Length: 347
Image 1 (cartoon, rainbow, N blue to C red):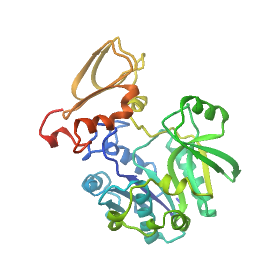
Image 2 (spheres, rainbow, N blue to C red; image 1 turned 180 degrees about the horizontal axis):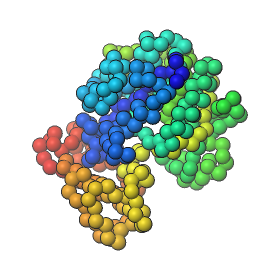
Image 3 (tube, rainbow, N blue to C red; image 1 turned 90 degrees about the vertical axis):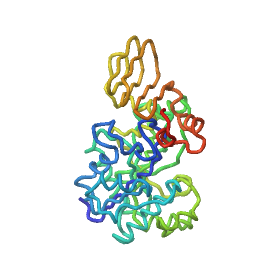
């Protein structure tokens, strides 16, 4: 256990990507679909033996305060930083930096993690996190935790890996989500890793980067959110930063960003159907069926997602689930992710 290592877990999801099971009041990170424990709970448990609870911070929305307190009673409440409004990841990261500096000073090493990812090999994750922390402590570099790709994903960003620097590597460039042909080239080359959106640095390193690229974020707390623009940390800092190192490990990482990708982590039958709850599938293949409400019965379907809850029902082609936000906006223009109960009607 490294005495000056802190971890800040970003947990501010809006509940859109896994509707109808997730809602603004119970977003993705509170769901226990994967592994019987919530993603938020898993994100804390995988730090056991590496970062103690008193050095773990949670950055989340003010509306999720009670749910977070209940889910993580071991985390001191002063370490749960409540955002009064959404300002994207740059503000969340900068707020965490301010809090860690208050607790551990400018030399404190901080890991920025997220609450909505899966990691199947926890021990490997811990080893790679230790490598990243060691590199961050010894340099003035930002260390980003890259993941060796296991298939040519088009839903993730990539990082081109450069020359070695101890146990980590120089990051040559960040690239956006590629098309399939480009993703295949990246994987075949062996020189690219997935950008998992996890970072490690000394507080002083991040403060210097913020001062250079996003000075409005230096020293902020949730009290400053109203005046801040919405901007991602990648756009505000990482795309401009010059001294960046990257790990290149494999710990079974997945951000389970859509219902389609979630099917990879549910029990599957011989025809690629992924099922949770009461579902009867006949002559179906590649179906994701999650029955948290009414039981599901499907006949002759291929590559679709069906989710039932007491609040609503989702039926979608697998290759369209990334447009779920558009669907929610169309059915409820005043509040895209609102649950049907808030509107006083069934789904």
